[in-house]
Image (cartoon, rainbow, N blue to C red; front, side, top):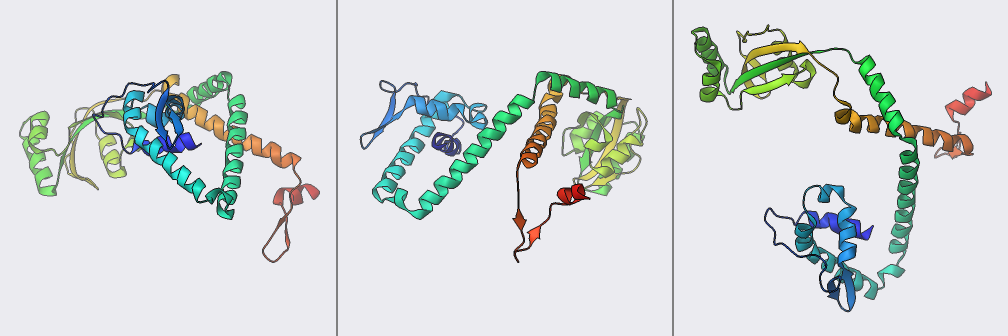
Length: 278
């Protein structure tokens, strides 16, 4: 737990071009603080335990910036021990809370991991494919400007035969090409306007959104297709995780005897239990 917190704190110190540190320190020791060792091994463990960090930087870069964080952490802990902080009620209360939280987390993670199988993921994806309702997608470009006057000027030039891409380079605040998108992917005003156009048409009036004024050109229209399983897998796992958590609590409640009371001391009846007695 401490390693994970220290590793997370070190992330804020990482820069684009940090000094490169060769791992393994001196005989596996990264630092010695008042006679206490900080090992490269524990720093590696902190690094591995944080996907948010190890997905963004390699260990050498992490080590170069994290070492001072670990040293500072050791200094603070030593000072806290010397001040007998570990004997205080505040410390003992927080330690107990932390123990309970860690136990809950580990129990739930292990339980959920066992319940999420590849077969369940495959079955859920098949259900997604079966229930997928073919939506339309359009491929469009736009020219985004600050004022309605400028947008009307662009439309006027399009009517005179000037090229959309050339006008986009001159006028647009953003890249013109938006690729394929469904109606729901865009802000409502933009989506409504884009999907009202036919292939090859451009908007005859400026389209106002929170970003400014748009002139839209629709280049293609097609039926949307279900996303590949690999791309959907994180979302499918998320759905199965929520189901597994719900089932886990269902099992726990079924086995448990629970009494709840309001602030005035009256028993709070569980609606489900009340319904069962009827």
